[in-house]
Length: 362
Image 1 (cartoon, one colour):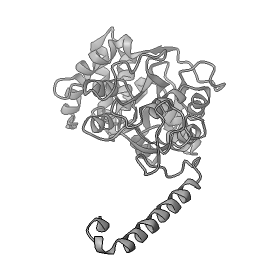
Image 2 (tube, helix red, strand yellow):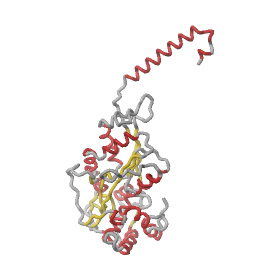
Image 3 (cartoon, one colour):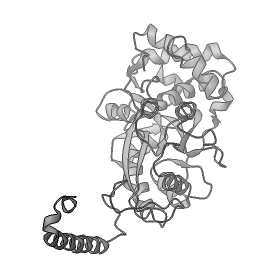
Image 4 (cartoon, one colour):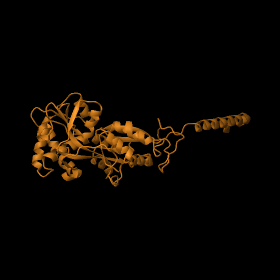
């Protein structure tokens, strides 16, 4: 400090120190007069903030949510603002990154910051468990870590001019189908397993199921890297039909897009997981947000946006029940399915894609 080096001017130095002390006091007093309840524009680590690890007032915690493409608007426009209005969400703000589920999972594994991850399917969480980025107990709650459900459906142009209603209709000559790339998109993998299960008697006749997939992929005209991009491709006029999440079709209709959809008699139950990362800078707030997603308030928001709630009684919205709805576990579970169908070099789908000249690189 300057006053330690200029002892001959001690009187001036003392006066300067007193003035500085008064200035600091005035600044602190001014900071104390701000509105501590404001949630807009908060950032983690900001000067003068503190975090309550008990889950109370969050003091400027900014949560990074990394998710698959489809629910981006639901999180950003509804769920996050609703959480910020709760006692646990006071002072919390969010930054979001949404895209193809597999790509997002790999990005987090490679260092993308995330406090909460919300993916299309469980293997994209499992990848992070293996990387020590998510607890092995992430799915220990009564919902097995799943926060929403859906089903695979067939979307068509308004009025269904080509009368496409069944899996068999999708493989007819001249029918152009839209579905995302199964080596980037979790939604695409649900689509593939829905088609396979429906045409293999839920895995009993593998040969019939694989034969159907060969026919189907020959009719797939565009394979975008995410389900939401596939929806954009379809609404922009490409294709006669789209294989998609039920919630994506409901979303499109809510946006006044000229689309109809059919829930096939045989289709798969989609289960979407959520988890807190072990590297979260705000673990208490992140867990509080995940807990909020299971409340009646949040589950109702999901239902209003086309997702089937996992919490019974959370919404009065009714969804059609397929005549025969099967699960991924009935097809052997994701570990077996991933190795058998989606290994990028020797999997069943990889071989089909390669025969059609489509890349399976990630």
